[in-house]
Image 1 (cartoon, protein in one colour):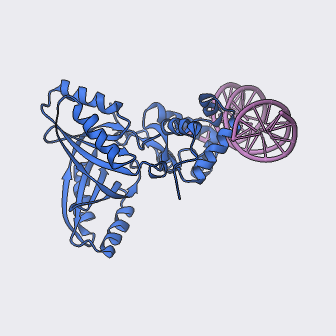
Image 2 (cartoon, chains in turn green, orange, cyan, purple):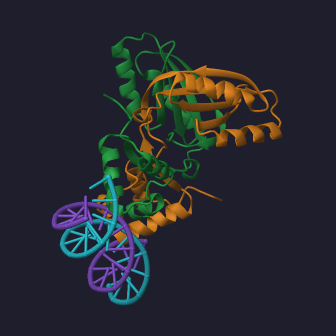
Image 3 (cartoon, helix red, strand yellow):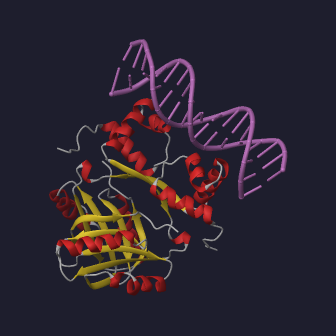
Length: 156
Length: 156
DNA sequence: CCTGAAAAGGTGTACGT
DNA sequence: ACGTACACCTTTTCAGG
């Protein structure tokens, strides 16, 4: 199971293009890879069905919308039993301020990226939301100055 | 200047929808927000022109493509003068393994996410590419087990 | 697995409200 | 600023190589 094969060069080129331009037409894609629209559409659908393409998203400039604050937050839980992890993750999924969350190896750590309009809104999120989630023991914040690169995901 | 206003509820709803479905048709968007296709297309174009929508991207399941290794890497430069930062960033932009990069406040200067097919490919990237970039002084890697949440960006 | 043609569906413009 | 109408373009389906 779980293979990654059956992906040929056409698929790879399609993936590379739609990573950079998710709204390109099937026709233009066909021109770019040297195929007529029909097989491109079929390949696209197959990649979606196999969940190699998991979705399409518009990239939004958060700062243009007034979300000037982006903070990396490390969270330690006080115990790492499965119940605690599940409860924490459920809470995280419901917070719109958390745009990204990873479960890390090591000591029951989560790494989050939290986006807010201001530092005071961030503080509010910390004291009003995050610290109130059951099981949260330690929180550590790191503040970035600027995003240097944003690819989203790697392509073949 | 350069503000977040002139964005009304229609725009916000459009943004929220295209964040989750970047390939939705203008027509379906219109149905969803209660507008005919024409104004929706105008609003979309305006959001793109104002660079609030900076692009569209397909989300690719890296692991389905065989990129099983994702590592957070902290990089410290031996000096923080502007030349060194610029040279480092130029190198980072050219590495396909680096899918995300932030310039941080504090002492650990850059935070990267690096994606490779295997641990040995990651090691190769470290010793063959990253450590060879001029000015790199310290490198620290953290390994995630699993991605819990992936929103891409925050929406109003 | 491809092409090509025809049907169905989406887009963009002009114009009226 | 929104909606409708219509011409144009894109996507999908299906026949055939």
